[in-house]
Image (tube, rainbow, N blue to C red; front, side, top):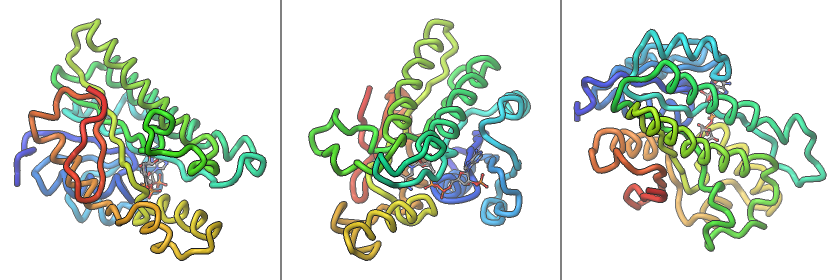
Amino acid sequence: MPDLANSRVIVTGGSAGLGLAMVEALAERGADVTAIARNDTKFGAARDAGARTIAGDATDAELINRIVADIDPDVLILNAGARAPIAEIDQQDWAGFSAVWNTDVKATLIGVQAALRTPMRPGARAPIMSSGAAMVMSHPAIDPSNLSMSGGYIGAKRMIWFMAHQANAVSRGRKLAISFQVLVPSQLIAGTELGRSVAATCAQVEGLGVDEYVLKRYDSHLLPSQIGRQVAELLAEPRYETGVAYGFRDSVDIMPLDQ
Ligand SMILES: NC(=O)c1ccc[n+]([C@@H]2O[C@H](COP(=O)([O-])OP(=O)(O)OC[C@H]3O[C@@H](n4cnc5c(N)ncnc54)[C@H](OP(=O)(O)O)[C@@H]3O)[C@@H](O)[C@H]2O)c1
C-alpha cells in the first residue's frame, strides 16, 4: 500500500508505543518517516521500520523548530506523552499532576508554533494525540467517576483539542492551509508502556488482572498496530482531510468526532 510515498512525516514519541506503531504503519505505506524521542538507545524498532531517528525532547522549542524547518514535512504528528501517576486527587503531588501538562501540552504548543511560524507547506497536516478521556462530560457514555484517578490527564488532553481549534483559526486567518487534527484513541491501549501501567494500577484497585480489567471496561483490546494503521489511513484518504477530531476503537471504522 505505498500511497504515502511522497510524504515526509515526523512523529514525536516515535520510538515506542503508539508513536512506534504509527512510524511502522506509515513506513509500510511508503512515507519517509522521522521519529523523535529522548532516549537514543530505544530506536531499534523505528530504525528497523526504515525511519530516520533524532534523539531529543519534544518540549525543546529550538530543536523542534529546526527539525520542522530542515525536513519541511507534509505531516507533523505530535504524539509524545508523559506517563503520569494514576492516583486519587489527595494522593497526587503537583509534579505528578502537572506531568502531562509539562510534556503533552507544552510539546503541543511548541509543535503548533513551529508549524505556524515556519510555516509548514500549504496542505500540510499536524495530527495531535489526545485521548478518549478528553470526552468525559461531553459524552454521556463516559462517567466522570470512572476517571477519578486521572489527575491532570483529562484536562490536559482536552486542552490539546482546544489548541487544535486555536491553531486552525490562525491557519485560516493567515491562509496557511495547514490543518491541525486531533487523534482520539477511545479505549485504553494496554499494549504500550503508558497504557500498561495505567491498566495495572486500575486493575489492582479493582482486584483484577490487567487483561480482565481491560475486557471488563472496554469489551476488547485495542492494539497499538490498529492505531498505527488507522492513522495511516486517516492521512492517506482524502475524506479525512478536513475534520478536526477523529476517534479510534477496536472493530469500528475511524469515527469523525468534531468536524
Ligand atoms: N496507551 C493508551 O492507552 C493511550 C490512550 C490514549 C492516548 N494516549 C496517548 O498516546 C501518546 C503515546 O502514548 P503511549 O501509550 O504510546 O506511551 P509510551 O508507550 O509511554 O510511549 C511514549 C513515547 O513518547 C516518547 N516521549 C515521552 N516524552 C517525550 C518527550 N518529552 N520528548 C520526546 N519524546 C517523548 C517516549 O520515548 P522517550 O521516553 O525515549 O522520550 C516514547 O517513544 C501519549 O500522548 C498518550 O497520552 C495513549
